[in-house]
Image (cartoon, rainbow, N blue to C red; front, side, top):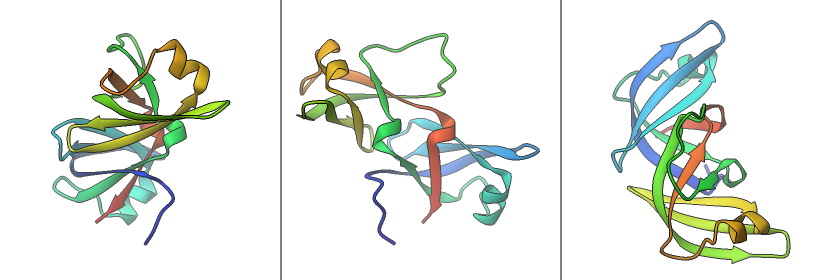
Length: 139
């Protein structure tokens, strides 16, 4: 199956916490970072997610935010450190490629934000992704 979602990070489920309607799924990415996905309980059951299940974490580039330093006191659970490798800026938006341990992410942010953060190749950043914006696919 081909997908338009560029950000696909491989990993392994380490924990599943089912709730009434939603479940949180903890994934250890191949780079060693932990990622949390909040998906429907039904989806977790349909995918038969249990510790040890290999998955791909799917992240739309429009749902990846960037910071130039770690942020505390924030509800966003997923904060992946990385390094900017490329920027393609248009009049309004910028596509920023970030290398993280075990893969690469693309963040679609405004050009103004990229300029305000002074992003350029080699700059360390933190990729921020809400758990509700992480989808999972079994491999």
